[in-house]
Length: 250
Ligand code: G
Ligand code: G
Ligand code: MN
Ligand code: NA
Image (cartoon, rainbow, N blue to C red; front, side):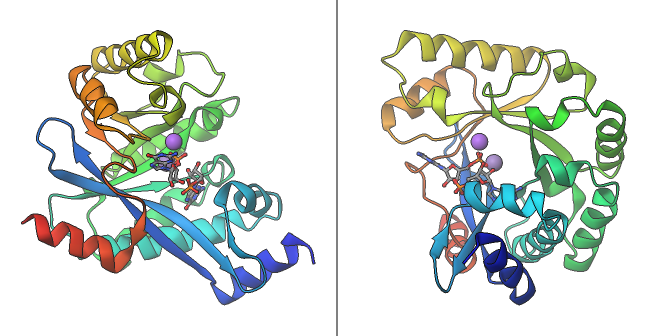
């Protein structure tokens, strides 16, 4: 059977769920929010990775529908989190080019009663390449509503840095490939330091992803990254578990 067939069926039956990975403040260790990560459990295939099915969903024109349901569910789930915690949702490049995106986002926020100021949308460098006008219009509209924009997987794309000040970007998420060899690898250490400085000088917040060890966490905290995400803090967990995690902190 083709993955396409199973994915279309999953879309109809809504065989998806969302896992949430918490994010902490590097200075205080307090939770700052969580990132929504889409999960698909196919009856025949078991768990299918988003890196495998999202490109196919994009090709089949299913991504906007799937993305809308992620936004809706995630805003609904996050509406029960303590009020100081933010929600991050990934937006694929194809979704970003859909002119209906701002309306879809606003609808999801309204339905859930979740404030725009607590929502951050994660886009990738690739999404900024080549479609300046459409992307600029969409990002500007989202910013006007008070929604924040993060650049995900930063450093792995191949666009020029000029988009960093051209587009309304609030946060840089340093890709986990740069974190993996910290602190021993001098090259990774230099790159992380440089990205953090670049972000700070552009008044952007910095998140480091993929933190797995205490040594990585210390390095990151000392080099100007505001937030930390990674298996050291927690793996992605289901909606009920993250509510429990957030409640225990209080
Ligand atoms: O959670 P995991 O490591 O398997 O995620 C792999 C990739 O899938 C990441 O690049 C992540 O950004 C992407 N991803 C996860 N959830 C979503 C989603 O809801 N929408 C989109 N477009 N991408 C997602
Ligand atoms: O591209 P994006 O940043 O959205 O991808 C997030 C993905 O990274 C998720 O699939 C999540 O499972 C994975 N991830 C989160 N923390 C860690 C970590 O500490 N180590 C590794 N290897 N992967 C991680
Ligand atoms: Mn992400
Ligand atoms: Na990433």
